[in-house]
Length: 283
Image 1: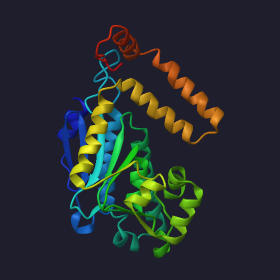
Image 2 (image 1 turned 90 degrees about the vertical axis):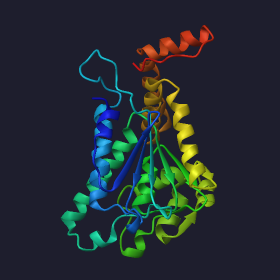
Image 3 (image 1 turned 60 degrees about the vertical axis):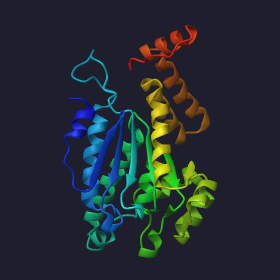
């Protein structure tokens, strides 16, 4: 079974899944709790992204068969209109022991790493509140788009906490250390336009309909390209992010050279010379 077929067979309580034209939309559906990241939500997100991680870009059955590119992009969003993901589940955290907290955060960290390293692009479509863990999971995605009503922030210090799902590390990568310190130390919320100005958000859209359309358009444009090249580009960008420039260039070089082992490169360059649209085999 392909990744798309396996996803279609999932039965989940806190997530809504929609697959259209190879684009998978994952919507967190806990509107009564503003889509907070309760342990069950994290568990179900781990089920979905774990499946995608195991299947995408890999042979369907055995070595030598076509790779599974049945899903070419993922949109992560929230239902209800008020929130993307309002944060971690505070009521659950109130009764956690130190050991419970370690498991809770460790499972979230692993999930976010799976999102970052998925071989296809992931777009966070932020509608409403993206606070705490909601902001952190958005930053694990490749691109963040926001509707005009979106609000971002890391308000954990008001609860006697710090960002624990990667916010201390990822926020400074997006907005620089000065903005990251200011936002984390004060816990203040920022609107979509300020988030765009400081580099957290790639684009602001007028409403949720335009937000969903922009996310789909970007992923469909990406899906028209070589899946091998997009996957290698994502890997190179992530590797370079955490390295000094010279080492980042080395990581880019290795990914660039790896392209020359692919049938996608041969098809892409041949199609360019022949002035036709490429038909990438995805291998």
